[in-house]
Image (tube, rainbow, N blue to C red):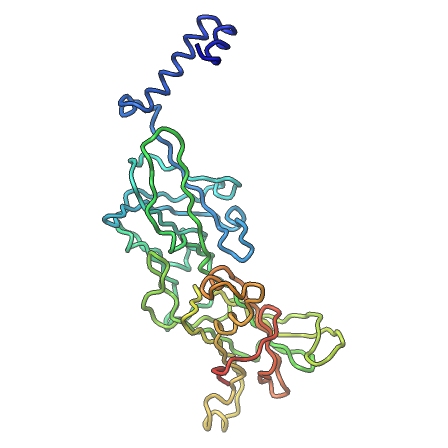
Length: 356
């Protein structure tokens, strides 16, 4: 007699021995042919979600993501065999896991879109259908490709983790993890006069151009028209800091334009163009770009300031970073002095292909 059986018998007599025997029989049944007909022994499947694909490498899912749609895909055919959307309060709680009910044991791929951008948002059109290739996302835009809204946040499962997962037949609770990355990015453009004099934000136009409005089921950009992002907010700001080449701290007024853009890709160009609104008639006739303040490749500049993440691959850095600020210093003619630009508080040297 085993030690456990001896303890049960001493504590509970023959009744305890019978209970131990029944428990052992149940456990044996869950690993035998009886398993196929015993609902109490069915496996339980759950999926947890993590958003730690950020620069801090900390899980921000509970604080940032408020809705998620999970698709279970047959890896052989690409067909959707199960799906569920959850936008309940439970999603925002620590330790949230989605229950996968009614799924047959087997090998599957997991695909997810998440965030308030994917669930009935006016900012995105989400693909629907029975195949993984249907599960796309497209930024909504006005005529001519104009986007001037603070895009709702959109997250996608990591494309390089779109791999086959096992959902075993064995009794117990089986948990899979889906990691997310953020597709939307905030860009803040700041114009400051070199002398510290006030800058009126309404004297300028601001545009960011890139054909990055459509994503496939693996989160790769697909063919699309060039979008023209315009600020969803233009404002004046006041800050304390140092004007270049001075050592005196001072307060200065600046113009700020806030954008939200789609996924940024290291192998592509995304152009930021700033112009003065007013231009003399004679200048307009002679040179259409005479009012140009600055024109820079946003992604090139963003990758110049990786700082402590200099060893991180460029695309990974862009996917983990989601907030960028660019400070331009203007001369007396309200043009960018291209010797000075700060990106995320780092002073950088303009690339050679910068257009002025």
